Image (cartoon, rainbow, N blue to C red; front, top):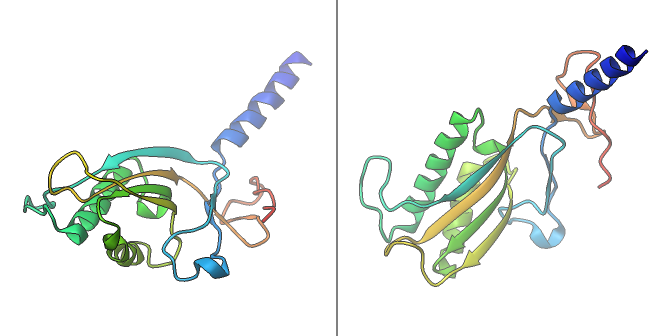
Length: 175
């Protein structure tokens, strides 16, 4: 009997810890329409990747991009993509970012690039903070983030999609 209980507990733990669910990107409210962030992103499971703050003063080819905000943003996202690929993910797995900028007038440029980076409109939950300076002169932006990878998709009823028959399904969302 003890072996049976142990087996049931072990199998339950294994299923709970290895079944992954997709990030649910909550839709925009009327006040947030057209903005390049999600009010919230809900995840059930998966591997969590904590991305350190990323900056760039040279692009991937070694060209100096000090003072070029858009080039820095694109390079930062390219570097984040490399890191995430190494961990088995991609930019689409980012669920939240915190962005530090030195000039709030660059906000629209950041939004434009984020629209290019996340063309499906599934933007990470985000915060943007204006700071007086970053670590190196000419550095205009720093982005850190969190990604959740190895997830499955959910349908609108909160059921896992694309899992083999008999696999666990996601719980219903209360939103």
